[in-house]
Length: 146
Image 1 (spheres, rainbow, N blue to C red):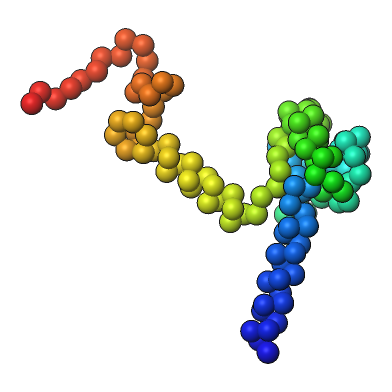
Image 2 (image 1 turned 45 degrees about the vertical axis):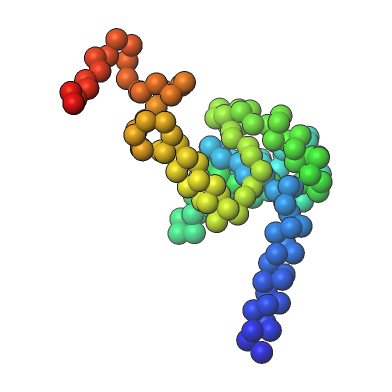
């Protein structure tokens, strides 16, 4: 019975994930004064919103500085990402992107970090553009003699 319930729960979870894939947006750098209604009003010009929520701290109810906006179609959400990213809301530029599950986002960031650290030169060494070592122009380079 427990296995059956767990399988049913997982199936419903995957159904929810696929249902909102491409229509749920992550919005960060929100001012503390921004409310759910303000977020909905700002994004409503891009299309039909099914939900808009500013995430709040469970203990004191203060804004955590980010939220989610869900549209009815992927086209509306794509338009919102393109047009709303960088827009000023309450005198702060917001960042808008397609929402990703926490595990997916974490794996993606770890992958990027691993690729960046293992680039040309020593592993983990910070590099400037074109693969040059990070530093300032004319910085002396010390090499060990063989």
